[in-house]
Image (cartoon, rainbow, N blue to C red):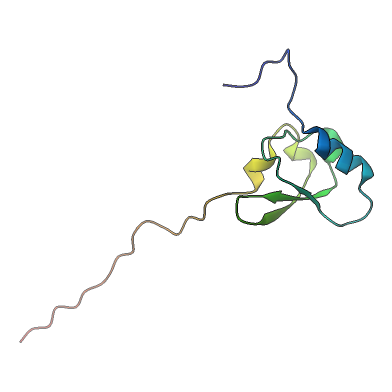
Length: 91
């Protein structure tokens, strides 16, 4: 279920302050995966925590309205079981 339009989008207050104070190309670290990406964030580098490490995300115009957690995946898919080829030796 989506957030009520009456409340408006959830954007972490600390993240807004960090973005306003950002200077160079150094990524802004954040744990706010549920925070929605606003148009003010476009063109900045963010380091979004995925539970184990920080994943670098460069925000583009197409990302506005999505959440940071969508771009920093938490699970690594390693495939469904491997097919093991067994050689049957004839005696």
